[in-house]
Length: 487
Image (cartoon, rainbow, N blue to C red; front, side, top):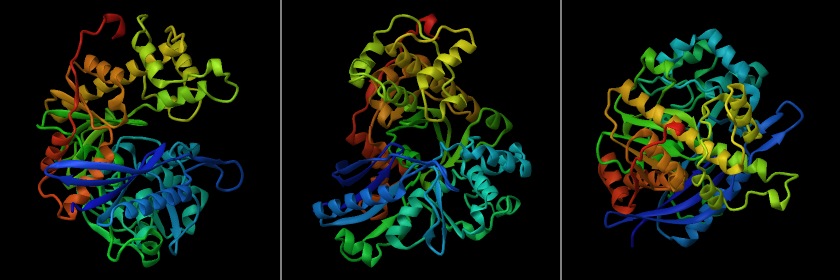
């Protein structure tokens, strides 16, 4: 009987529990549970703001794990990944409040406070991170100003928090820790001097562990609740979901870029060492930790969030049945058929970060620059996808220039790999073939790192990717000539 592993994959809009195994060099996945991830907004009191419903996520994922263990009686381990930067504060092991959502507006003061202590140029030289106002280092500064750190003795990022609740062990998995802004970009250990300058106690941060490490066995009461046998362990994977997704990029050479396309688009390449130049900082590229000590040299570009928020606006309260968008596939087909030139806007503009009426924001962006806004919903969708593809193309060119690497192909993985129009527009605008898939890249990477740690497969990161390539046939998109009006 082939042993399996259980992957918990928590995304910004939904979570899932997936069973995975490797048979004869090919990957086998089975979805056991899928559940929504819906943030909650508190309007009063000290904790007012946008939060993750972390206890509901925990309830759903443990129910999914229990089902997985009923379905398979020989599960080798459990691995957890999620989005980056967000965390819970604890004291004596107890959570002090529900984690804030990175789209909460509280962090502006945190940016000012951090840069008042450490200039942006020095901060980049130390942590190598793209400036994003919601990076953990800025969130923690906002919490410090509010007094929240006065009573906390530990900070745990979301996947580490879930692992703690399952095992009782507090760790900081390296790939996600690299997104905090407090990890040294070269050593991949906590930057204690930076912590001291920002007023953080070293003990606030758990020990860093590498993907493939055993975090710990399930607590006895958790094992009973899940119906697990003795000794079932939680394994550290690339707990930043993009780190797991990059493991599953079926690249066969060193001349490929990746786009992990979902709520966000993470566009970049994999390197052996960080790029910490002034030019890299000016281009707002980030150096995040990858599996096996690799560096994910990339840029955070807005993603399908723009489309999902637009549809939420169109289908929101007050919309009649006639006004609702209905089938996404039909809307994408209408967008593909648009022949009138649509505006290409800056998809990285901060105005598109917070929840809200995205079509109205796109209209305002265009009008401020004397551009004719999209007029119909199909044109809005086409404008969004053209703008994303243009941002991808610019980022790929920058990655090539800043790293000195040649990029000949682009791999798109994640949910965006199913969007044929986006994939074709990306091929058109980059002038490079696009290979799309796998869709469930994050779960695939999670499973493969666990499988290797359990001895179910062996080999390098390239060997793991050969399993992906043997299992999933990518869809290939060749670049077409882009009409001048669409450039």
